[in-house]
Image (cartoon, rainbow, N blue to C red; front, side):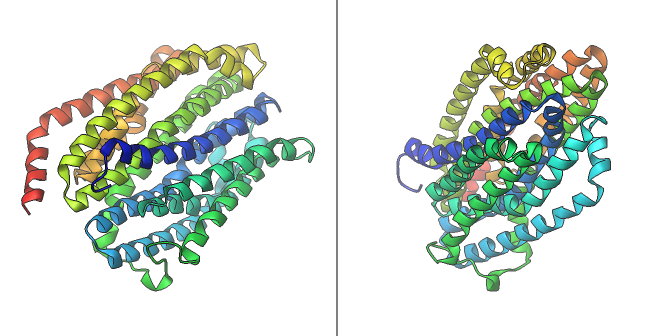
Length: 443
């Protein structure tokens, strides 16, 4: 990361993470495919649950990604002991969060109703979501560990844990659903098993002392010197997932008056586009590791070069994904449902979500860049824009003005507005950012 070719380093750090996250997206995709065969009500149930599925990774990323970014910076600066304190404390907080989230089970039914579950969908949503919440005991630590091991260069291990967990999930899914007769509950239990396997692969890396850094309960602290840097990076990343969850719930609530078929169609589109989003998100994680390390080592020329390449590659990839999602919308949606109305609405939802999806590549890299060069407030604001402070008002306005069509195209409108705002900010702060990096170099 310090002296090798920048493009090679970005590929090395980004590609395994892309593959790993795509596998995570793929098993979510496969889950949806199998559950959709059970009926529209079951597909509606996992559509209602999907906002929680997107929120929980955010908790793991809050600690894992925030901790990993700071660990990379400390390693770049040669501060191994401090990095071990950050590692141990981060994982401990993450475990506490996974236990604390179980409290959601106490008010699950009213929560699912508020998220748009109809009387026909609610029993399936309760069954499916209740099991998933138990599985968060493994999913949150798994996501946290994936990021922490990557911070010290164990990228292949992080990726392997995601791939193996996902493959097991895909294999077991149809077995649990049909031969074992568990239906939608079977799909949820395979998720739990997959996440448990991921943790079982990652944790021995530290317990058997194969790691460069030592994970120990003795190193656990709660001190501002490392909590603040973790949260400065982690909270904006968590906010992305939080507002993605809120936006999905808001879209389901807005779609509820149009019936369960509309919610099912929206759920299919969200699952498909969500999977392709993982590709860009995965690359941004590798890019973040690279510039965090080089920021700590004060190699700002390498940060500039990596940022230019990251913009070019992510935007190009986003364009390709956008085109594929639009061109193949009909067969993709048709694979999930045989209901003509669900297919018709699902295709429209896919088009709406895809037309400006390519801008997400630029947005993701810009946000990571701002966070890692200590423009934390700006990075935070933009991280909650695409599916938060911009999306939610746009959704309300377009749903009121254009009904279902407005709901389907709300994300496209929010993408345009968010991209324009980020471009304007980057142009307006160019001199300030240059002066900041020059001051760091001189210091």
